[in-house]
Length: 187
Image (cartoon, rainbow, N blue to C red):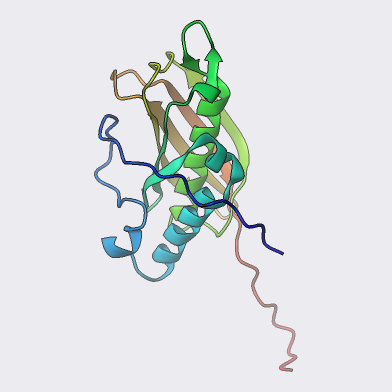
């Protein structure tokens, strides 16, 4: 039986963390952005993927844009996510969840990828602490897909510096839909 999740928390998109590579459709607009057929299905899967993960709901992570192997997710500042009470800096674990999920959404939105994914390897380099009080936005691009593995680059930023909060590279599984095996049986 499918698990019923709480409704998506309200979130206003922020303009304080622009993303590279041109504009991506906002959440809910992916179908209006000209994607059709299989590519549109991949975008829908990526949207469902992010909205159905309980940890994304708990962290307030929202899908800001997705399409053609790219994704943008945002995580608003929350006191519950502070890793250092003296400085108010968000814990690196929350940033890693944001980047991992964004990378997975990018894979799932890639036209050549499958309908599911899992992280095989994710290297995150933390470059600076996020500024307390700021929304952290992750951007990921799935830049190469083989039959079984997708490769992703991602960054996280808080809109206060050209230096990202973190950057990541990763490898993800490419899960394909099961195909019917030809057995000669037509029943």
